[in-house]
Amino acid sequence: MKIDNFLQLFVVKEKKFFPLFIQSAENINSAADLLLQQAKSDNPDERRMLAHRIKERETEGDAITKRIVDELLSAYVTPFDRDDIHQLAESMDTFLDCIRDSSKQIAMYQPKEPSRKIIEIAEYIKQDAQILVEITGKFDNMRKEAKAVDILCNKMKEIEHIVDDVFESYMSNLFEFEKDAIELTKKKNIAQAFEDTSDRAKSTSNVIRSIAVKMS
Image 1: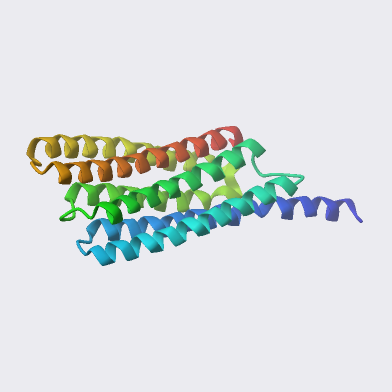
Image 2: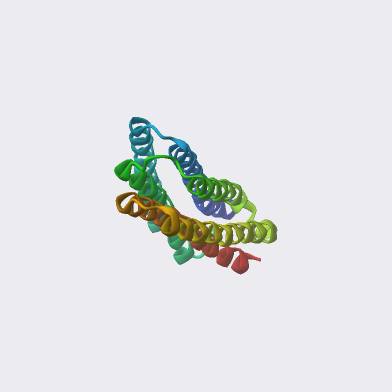
């Protein structure tokens, strides 16, 4: 076998990671869209149906993560550091798990009405997911796109700061004005799950930013 053909085998193997990360991000984006629909819904049956669909996205996410790990175990050459690839795959999977947990909270607690601020946080989570799709689309050319990736990661960080402010405002109003103790507990747990999801999105962006710095 010629040496250039031999090296090409490594290149093909290396590039297998990119479509898997894109697929993972698109799956997360789909789940985030369903979560936003669920946050807007006041129909218990629709809320449960959407939670089931998000569960399907979580199952698909687990399968994608497993494929990334399987490729990692068999690859001779990787596009990024092996530990970084594994950490990113797990972080994206955890982001999806948090979306699923937020969905479960709504389906389980069934609040009396949709909350404007919870919907707002869900919209920011959707923005995070969309940015993640854009970022993974740049992985194939990371050395040239490192600066652009860093800018997108910074947007996710800014979103997390905004969500923190929305969450704090919501919780303050909740404890001041919600007189039904059961409803207060429901809404508090839902809000916390959504805020945790935003935190996980930022953590994922931190992993990506670290990769971009190493590649630049």
